Image (tube, rainbow, N blue to C red; front, top):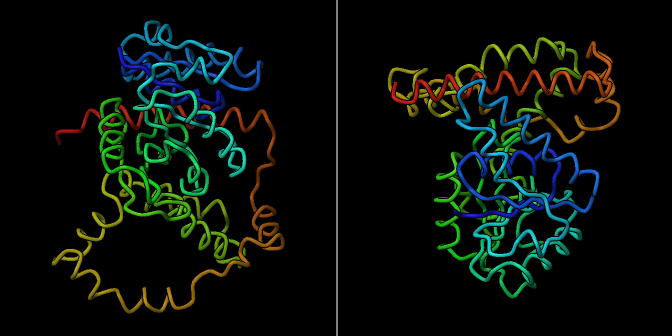
Length: 310
């Protein structure tokens, strides 16, 4: 039975444990926090049970039984094929963690980071095994949103990228390859561009934050959920993508000539958007909305799986 080590038992780490355990892998999970380690098994089982309700996990009890929690990194990585690191988004901390992983993990094990924006060259340069290190950036939560961005450092072995891609495909994820290092990789750069324009439009009062969300949720997002932006515009002009660009490039040129400025992230503009957002944050609201999100994502993923041959 193949095995994986999950370093970090927070939201992303627990979700990765579900991904690998559901696919039949043995999983060893660790975290510096004893509290996080103690809570992880119950939360993982709950997530697997919810997947089973939508037909996305065949035997949640057996999958949960393949996850074990250990106290140290050395215990977690012993004999594994892949390590998925999920430590906080701090370069210095990732350097420390990857140095420990490189010391203890088998020489052939892939060392992958779930970092959202930090390129691998910033925390792997001095490692003896730096050629087996890469970023494998998921979307939260990865057991429900399957895309994972694979991005190596300049010294990452192409064979490691290929092997990682095969592994993530085998456990039910949808890997994409980022061909050279970019801060934020692909997904967060796309999300960042949309968010900047969203903060500009809402901050200037062109639209309320709620109505802007409706525009994406009930407009762009519906098409993008099964087509993507290039697939969408291919169908928006008789001659496909080139025809679309010929028809609409003038507008988009004018738009991109005056993009949203960095100031949209300043406290003053953020405060305007927050003031127009009708809800006050609270732990209870966040928990309820997260649970609802996960239920709807599970239902959507089950629907997409049922339409795979359409």
